[in-house]
Structure formats: structure tokens, C-alpha cells
Length: 388
Image 1 (cartoon, rainbow, N blue to C red):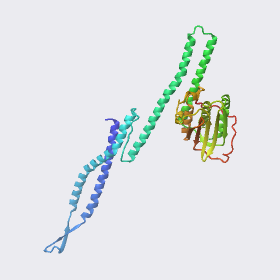
Image 2: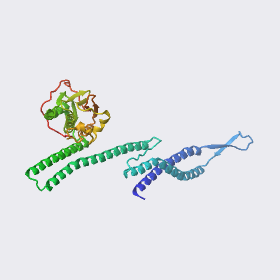
Image 3: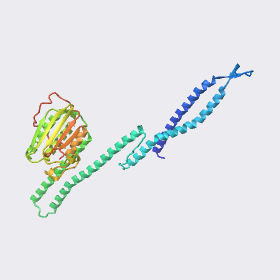
Image 4: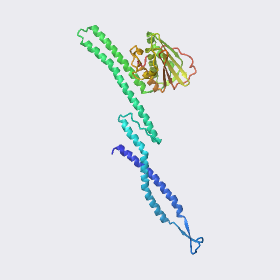
């Protein structure tokens, strides 16, 4: 017998003894309450006359010794009955717990699609089963997402490594390679190394975002967006994209670096997946107690049924949408992770003329008196958490 089986049966024994003790105590009290009045009852009897109605004397009816003997016999008989009843009731109450334990063992062995599926009656154990079913469903989704992520990350990391290995092998195998050839090979190797470095940085940014918020500070989304716009303005100008900001104070609480990473990845995504002479508009405002950030960009038409997929790691649309060729499909995944870490809400919609509108609402925002005064985007900030 295993220790778990012993603990389970020991629990049934303890419950059975508790139930039996309750039943036994109730039976003993019932006998006391019945016997005490009976012991004082005096039976009247007719004496010396034929008329039963003539009462001439009294004598005791039920004696105390008889009551004590009868009570003792009743208590002796009640003991095994109470134990049997307690054992039965404890077993009935522990049946759902046994089902939970058995199914949990199967699920922990790797069969994550199994569920407890406890039916009626609805009680505390059934509620526990429903809670565990929800937990198992979330764990299954999390494990599937992790397996998918690891597979994609391995593929993305293997590609530049294979390219670098091929480049070096071809260069070393060329007996006529001169200094110019070697220099060109080194430049290509550096480019591949830079690609790997950016990918690793993006993966680290995603992992940091999914870890959650470790510090909460009061910050203004307008200040954060102002710095990000300043750091991306040169990149947008080079791509022929108009980068505009309509920033009004929007105070919220969160991790400044993570929120800056969120804004930076939204702007980078809007600039990268755009077209020449396009535009990107960043807006911050307050709505009640919410601080709202909105990024709108022009670009290719995005199918409405594909939007949610873009917020998963390594997910991209058609190649023409990311024609710049330097994206990894992690930018919006980082945005989604930061949003969830801050308990904010994320909404994305496709624009009929092309491009996206993405809005993040932070629920810990605080309304401020001068929320209607626009702030001009200045020159502050640096690139943070670029998910490419």
C-alpha cells in the first residue's frame, strides 16, 4: 500500500470515526432525554375492588435498573451501527475526491486533454473539480504554446547559423580566395551575426514581458511615446513614412521599460509594415480612469480574420506585407505579453484602406486636469525591446 493510499484510507477512517461519534452521541442523548422522564412515571393500579375506577394506592411502574440495562444494550447495539453508517457516509463523500485524484494522476502523466468532468450534485468538491478543469485547460494551452514557440525559435535560430556555416565552408574551400574575398565573407558573417543578435534580443524581450511586472511606477504614456517617436523619426524618414504624434497626458502605473518596449514595438511594426509615402500616427489620451494609447498606420490591406494571429510569436502574413525582410514576427507578440502583464486591454482592427489601428487601454490610468492640452513630440528616448 502506498503512502498516498494509506493517507486516503486514513482520511476515510477519521471521517468515519467523526460521523460515528456524532451518531453515537446523538443516540446517547436521545436515551437520556427519554429515560429520565420515564424513571419518574408512577403507574396507578386498582386494589381490592371490582371497579377499575377505584384508586386506593400506587406503586412504581418501570424500575431504574431495567432502564439502565435497556439503555446499555441500546448503546452497545448503536456502536457498530454508527461505525457502519459513518464508514458509508465518509466513502460517499470521498468518491469525488478519489475521481479527482485518479484523473489528476492520468493528466500529470502527460495526458493533458483529459478532464475531471464532475457532474451533479453541485457542492464544494464539484466546484473544486471545475476549477481544476479550468486549470488543466490553461496548462494544456500554455504547454502547446510553449512547444510551438520552441519549435519556431529553434527554426529561426538554426537558419542564420546554417547560413553562417555554409558561408565559412565555401570561403575556406576556395583555394583562390584572396583578401577581398575573405573581407567580403567576414562582412556577410557579421551581417548574419547581427541578425542572430537582434533575434536573441527579441526573444529576451518577449521572455521578459511574459515574466510579468516586477515593479510598478507612475508614468505618463505621452512622455514614453514622445521618446519613442524621437528615436524612430530618422528610420521613418529614410523609409519615406510620415511619423506623427498627437500626445496628451495619460498617466498610468506600470513598468516603464516594459511599456516603452510596447510602444517601441508598435511603432516599429507600423513603420516596417507600411508603404512609401505612408503614415504612422501615435495618440495618447485619457478616457475616464483609463490611459489609452493608439497607433494607426497605413499599409497593405490586412484580412480581418488574420489579425489575432499576428499577436502570436513568429506569425507573419503574406511575404509582401513584410517586404523589408528584417522581421521575425515577435513585435506584436511582445506587445501582447506586455499588455497582459499590466492587466490592460488590447484591441486591433484592420483599416478599410489598408493598415492597422491598435489600441491599448491601461486600467490603472488616472485622470488629470490638463488632459486636453496636446504635447508636441520632442527628441528624447532610445530604442528598447525591438521585436522586429
